[in-house]
Image (cartoon, rainbow, N blue to C red; front, side, top):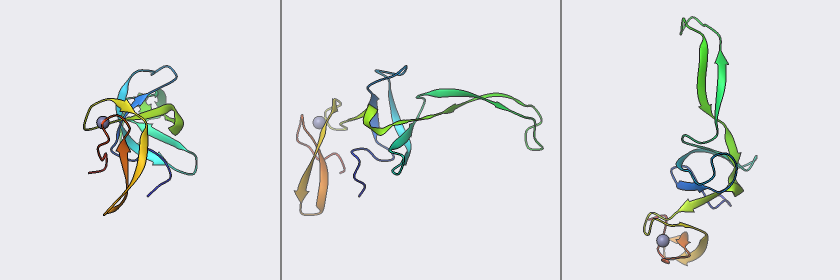
Length: 106
Ligand SMILES: [Zn+2]
């Protein structure tokens, strides 16, 4: 398990930046850079050139990475953005919601 509090597929709340307060799902995590890509967050316009695949060039919007420390996980049990704690359970270490004390990884 990674040392980060979030992982791919988690729903998170954005804490800072232009997308502050928005929610999205984590699409990818880059542990070495401590950054992540969140669905619909930090969209950046990219200019593309016409290629053989797509005849038309143009502008596409793609998610840019954001710092992992700028997101907070949304508990799937109580729906609140929360800090997570680690808890030793029979199946190993799991992340638990600090609000409802439920296992987030179940
Ligand atoms: Zn909870």
